[in-house]
Image (cartoon, rainbow, N blue to C red; front, side, top):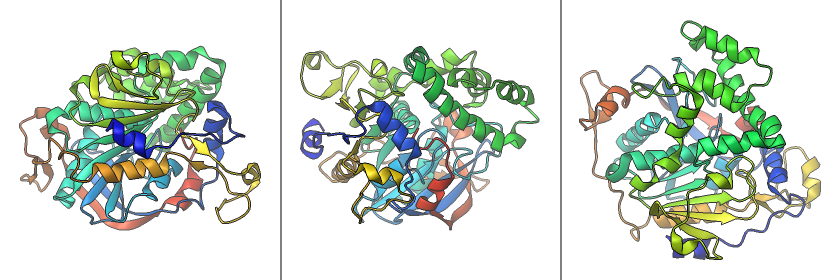
Length: 425
């Protein structure tokens, strides 16, 4: 993995007028990307064992290679950071984006939301894709919160992991440390913290009907706070409805953060993972990254293997912000509406898109070992649902689906990007 990464990823040179992580991250959040990397999808919607819904947006269906993608906080397949990678994938790769509960026009049908550590919905999406494309090889791509979910999922699956490898970008890794860092800085506490919590609150209120019978008091409490922080939101809402029993409800936000942090599980990962992180990321802090192995602690290289597991590699850049990594571009492009790349003032492009897509293509070749869990098969059960062939009680109780819609709805990624809040976070 490390040699391949060194060959594929060029040196990152940030856009001159976006010189640090704050500029990069804020630009990412306000950039109009509706005319950039236009990607269309077919939406598949699944009813889950607990009555909830998820969607899987599929681009370029039916290929023998499959990239399974998890978006960031309150995001979806419309996000520019998702589309820019999908646009670079080869024609021989199908891209499937898991849309979390309540996100991107996926109806929230139960009082249970997505969270940073709940991986059963990803298990169910993979189960569906395995049933849909039984011979396809899979690599995972995760962004921010989705990067944490992918990493924790790979650890939970261990020798049964259905992915050959994974690429995760801007993983927050240790949510407890990250939360402490976020609340200790002025911009972190008063800007990023509240931008993220406001997105969560907007999602919650858009699906108020799902909570009014069971969690009306919590809904009222979090709305009574003028600007709730992420920690307050987690303490009032997520620790109670962000996962399945027996883990949930959790006693407090700190316990939730420790439970969900992928950094606490990486020793169990059995597949190669490349993580891309920026040292000036104002959300996924360097202080929360996994420790490098001893031989890398004094190395000048910006690529290291993790001490807890040498299969996990971290490629880090000095700049890049949170899921941004913009390079090139003309400053006048900032003032345009609906920017395109065929004029005199091109906007910046995300540096990671081409190398990530190229790496995924390489990982899906025979040069890399098959997924350790490639032989696992879906089976149909008496009520027509589909589940994994397993004796794991967690899987049989919470991992399984019935199909609500199988690709009839077309999702236009560029058009949907205009409807988001706090995009890029």
